[in-house]
Figure 1 (cartoon, rainbow, N blue to C red):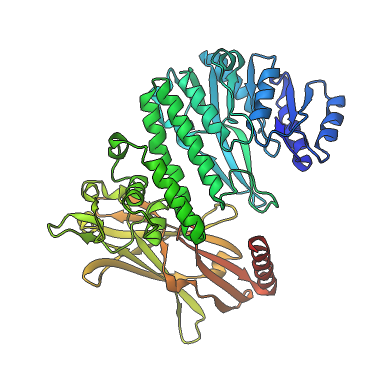
Figure 2 (cartoon, rainbow, N blue to C red):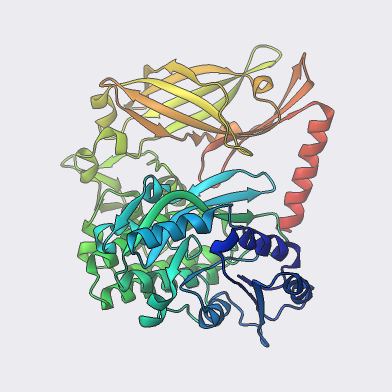
Length: 525
């Protein structure tokens, strides 16, 4: 377990490791030269617990890799795991991983990591597709998706395997050191055991005074550090002769890293955008034809092609929507004189012909959402939804219905689902489909609500979607309520352009809104 100036959480992390029982023979707590009470706290815990050994570094390393290497060097037992001082191991995690590793004769055992947003407690599984059922993977090349799980903390490693192959973390201040470490592990072709058990709780504290290194993305050096880590991971895999894994790592860069940062680009200032755009072009220039042809209609690939085609930042609203999950391609839908679909009249060389053959359920369809007042006193609201055509593919699939659900941001729990029929309409020269349905904020209650949609086609298939927030929908509404006296509703666009609602009820809700706005102002100024 590594930590630096984290006295508020380090005791809980150590306790979660010791609570694993006899499966944990020793907890090595590596204090990276903390200046707070961390070292003293760890020393007191070690006096009472013989399984806890404290290693204090004399000089702060500036990163996470060096203290983890210190722990690897000091490990004396057959298996080793990693834990950060502000995270937790859930009960039974080590037993589950150790049983899987020994039973399969695996050098590495991995399980499900859960991101827990604090203080809300909302949880989101990390790379859940890899951990749906128990599996033994004889060689990582047989499951290229493994490159998406870049975490080092949700895994148990045979200590001798790490030492035999010289697998270590980058030293010093190196952000995203686990990208490089994980690539070194996969390059050594371990036998892996995968289990669906929850084995790690990753705490995400966005309201902390000091954001974690991976969350502090508003400076360009974070992006340059991430691209450097991804480039090193690719070089490691390719240098070890693991070409399929190296290609998968580049596809993952387009699908994950590029989309995540492009989605936030409209939020940054002009200097950041230009620096980001120039650096990204230099990174993508290393890609070859095989990387671009792997999935040419994938959102990340389209993003990269637009960036490479323009020396200056452009089309940021469209790029943000394309980077969303799921992706949305906003109008206009341009064609060349010979009717081939392209990105725009200005970039006709960015062809979109692969969209003509993709299944409707995988297309970057756009549904736009607008919150409208209804009635002379505006005592109620309606949700107006518009589905846009995409090169004739939507009409071909025959859209029928929309399942509309609001999910509470704090817990992820859905409110009651509503199914509504789509009606044909026309916007400009292109066909569209629309739906209107009541919006009842009082039934939702206080909180932040995300809109989720399921579009159903004539053949019974469906596509899960989010809705692009119409620019006019950000107007705030104050409504009378028999139950609460007053409702305050603020529709807004999220970082990815999706529609969300903030609902506050009564005078207390109004005060919470004001406090929230004051806190957001304080953090951004």
